[in-house]
Image 1 (cartoon, rainbow, N blue to C red):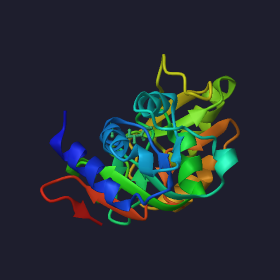
Image 2: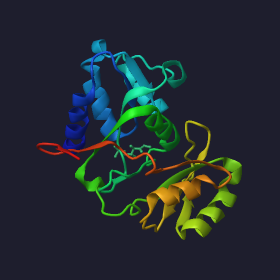
Image 3: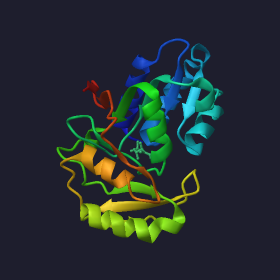
Length: 215
Ligand code: 5RP
């Protein structure tokens, strides 16, 4: 239980309008948003989910989960983050859902990120950067990531993503140019998704507190 995560999740309801199909992220902060969304489930058009975990949570509340291909662009995406810099650029993927999260963020007009104050950093990289890779490319990708960034990739053993892939967490980074690093890492064969959300940052960040801070 985290009061600041709950306050951030509940504040994000302010951005939900009647009839909307809402993009929904993954994690413990988003879980509070889903609980709040459930209280207005009869007024929304449904949700597009970024993970099996969130899908189960949404359906458990009787919220329709729709296929992104069937609904097209979304007006709103609400998701948490592992780190957030002053430009609303993020590290995400602590819950291994980064690839679907990035797809929904890209498909959404407005991305509202909900975090507790501990997630705010001046420079991204203290949290190890998650990268989703095709299993057979794990070693190849790890060597290329080391060469490109100087960071140390560590295999998150035992974790398989919803897409059937693996995660490398890159330690020891100080990401002063996140847009360039995101672009470079995306070029590595076998990399499916990079947990840097810099090219498409959040549009709004809600930092949980009394009252919540909207950045
Ligand atoms: C999942 C994510 C989450 O948004 C991130 O890990 C934050 O999680 P939490 O709200 O539990 O702190 O990127 O892939």
